[in-house]
Length: 327
Length: 271
Image 1 (tube, rainbow over the protein chains, first blue to last red):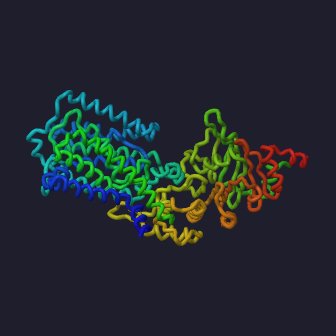
Image 2 (image 1 turned 60 degrees about the horizontal axis):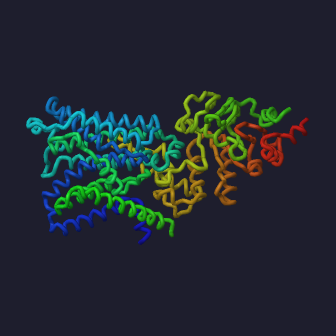
Image 3 (image 1 turned 135 degrees about the horizontal axis):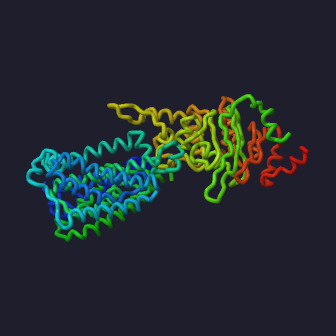
């Protein structure tokens, strides 16, 4: 029994996250007399989770290789501004492609620093964080970019976060699609095997002929694109964006990945877990709003949860390995 | 006649072209010279013992051969072709497999994923490459169990669960079951029991007899003297001795290593 439980945890690191999501949902529902589970709150939660989770998926892929990307918040901000700035003049589709291209270029810039020059990813992406936040503030200089009425009626705008499908925001379609694609990429393809190998032990991976730098470059580009996509989905939902758009989102995305069972040291990730981690963080946020607590407290509560999750993660991991060794 | 000349005649390789040829290879990290002007040839169907003390440059030498590091000077030829780009991928594609002490296994991956890392079997679905997990599982399970790993080892489980000796056995199993031309073993018998050690040494001889080039790195001159065709001794990043097994006794070779690469006794005897 212990042994089977251990094996289950070894193979499914998101097991702990699922348990926590269920516990948190029940607790929040009870404490808010059911309001937390109301249709309106769940719809809003779904949209918020989708936006955070797509960004966190990119973060999780970077974490899988043992690196980190703390520029995702700024990237999503700059790309949201690109999208809303271009949409009225060039149409939503062109604006979407342009925003994704900007995200890809920033990802490539991060990738060059990390994979070619050899800068630690924390520093390289810290640079991007400030740089693109600065560009975001400079471009808006106190104003905000708003989607015009004509833009809001465009099909592309509605398809990418601006509208609903079966009563939920279209962002939900994209998060589920991303989940399936990235899960298969990571766990069912040779590329995924190599991504995980690089995070587990880059020197060993290199000795097996893996192009380590190319893989690190690739995940940073992917992270840039996903951060851009997340920014577009959120900008389309909200309808306007200013220079602070996306600020501190990198913290939430790292927290979502860690809550979801991704090891910051690399080599072990779960995309389903990351989605649940994002849901948990957004759930806490909406719970605090329903309770009438000032939203600033969210950061404190989220921090506490992440600390507890990392402790639980360690002991669960030890338990899982311990049972297999027969100890 | 000095020791270097006798090698050519006694091992009968003068007519053959070397499979791997290193010419005046040096490697420096800033002021530190890890290898200085090393020239050495390796032939197909030969078991070469690469011996030397810690820091002699043995591991550096084989890391160059296996493409992990690029030399700062000199040339390396593989099967007559000059190597221009050093990357492990090149070496593996040329059929060179290196079993190293500290690297080669990703602890976070399963046994089967480690087994196929870098050359995963693929089945195409809608044209996209997906891992052929069934083949990965069955092939790796057969190989590791043929090599004597416990029946309770599940190839789907993380390789971190194996013991040090089992991991070493795994690396050897992986190296020899793919079709290769060169097997390099870097201290392959570390962490192994007496019986496992004998098994590894038998295996090295078998591989040589199958026509492979086997380069066997060790501290233990007595152990390698029993099985090698030729012994190369390194000291302070230089090649100091390169003799066929029959030319010198293990005791004499040990004397060279102990004296830091000088050959006073032998030189005196030859003169």
